[in-house]
Image (spheres, each protein chain N blue to C red):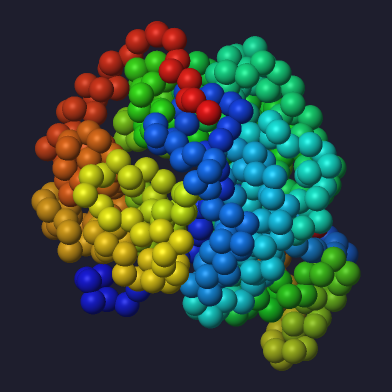
Amino acid sequence: MDRPAIQFSDSVCPRLPRGVRLSHNEAQGGWVLLAPERVFKTDAIAVEILKRCTGEATLDAIVDDLAKTFAAPRERIHTDVVTLLSSLADKKLLEL
Amino acid sequence: MGASGSLPAPLGLLAELTHRCPLGCPYCSNPLALDKRDNELDTATWARVFREAASLGVLQVHLSGGEPAARRDLPELVRAACEAGLYSNLITSAVGLTPQTLGGLADAGLDHVQISIQDSDEASADHIAGYKGASTRKRAISGEVVKLGLPLTINMVVHRANIGRIESMVELALSLGASRVEIAHVQYYGWALKNRATLMPTREQVDEAVRQVEMLRAKHQGRIVIDAVVPDYYARFPKPCVGGWGRRSLNVTPAGRVLPCHAAEVIPGLEFWNVREHSLADIWGASPAFAAFRGTDWMQEPCKSCARRDQDFGGCRCQAFILTGDARAADPVCHLSPQHALVAQLAEEREDTVYSYRSS
């Protein structure tokens, strides 16, 4: 749906709610996000972001960490992270 | 995929723990001939099935029935699913569940709860369920689920008696603290097929229901996820039933028979294997019932040369058999089926008779 995404600040501490978890499964070809009656295939970038959504790290800190770990431009990482997190929050797969 | 193609790994296991249920919903998809209690698999066998499912690649187990809470060993079964590494989903009427049992299930590692609600109007809900006081108990148990911090889905099966109240049903799900609501139009199998004329909505009602769902999705975006199961008698294309036969999921009956979908036993001549005699991997890979309609080799026209054949897999095999007498025919819900006119005709056969409640 083309509606404005959920707005949130860089100081939120995103986390996966109860009933949503990342799982690695060889038979299904890698990482998946398990959610109520749904399963999402998860690419490598999303996995790196989601592993950091512990409820303790702020969005700011997550972006810093990713930019450092992958030696990538911070702004671009910030955009990617916000896009993913808002789409997940929209599907009730993430708490902000 | 042909018969020699590599086998996909299943994603989901529907575990029908029991066919016993205190409710009598006339749209129940359980078969008319229900498995008896003395034939139910024991705790240890279910635990083995869960371990075998996880090794096959299954990610989620849907603990269903009948009413799964009718099994006294439900907490042990949840624990077994959790220990096997499966994501566990309890599909319940909530009648027969107590806050204590629920707490035990949460401790055992339950991941998610789906509670069915028959209507936002309580008198109508109890009438549909054939159980006085069901609605009040369901609302109370929904509250307990949320209090425990478990994610809650409210499932609303939609038919002629409640289709005008979709908005208030979604509002109810929101007020109960659900994060997801399923608006599931009745699918006509089992008891629902028997009650088809009483349950079937009109096309105008269905069109309005679809508009309502769209409007409610926009209105409640980010607050609640609204998933809808389409009413296929009014569709142009068939549903890709169970994501393709023997492709994504398996169903184990209370007595241990393994089916590609819960209605598969209506198709005559299929040989189902039982978990008492075979491992789940054996059944998935080699049982005749799973091989029967896997892939596309079994298809006849118009499916065989259809551009959508790998998308909807010819629709539902059970529905094709129920409506045309040929399980290899195109699902007649599809407008390309030569028997499509029959579906429109059946949808017109509406009658306001009393429900044939499912037996327990």
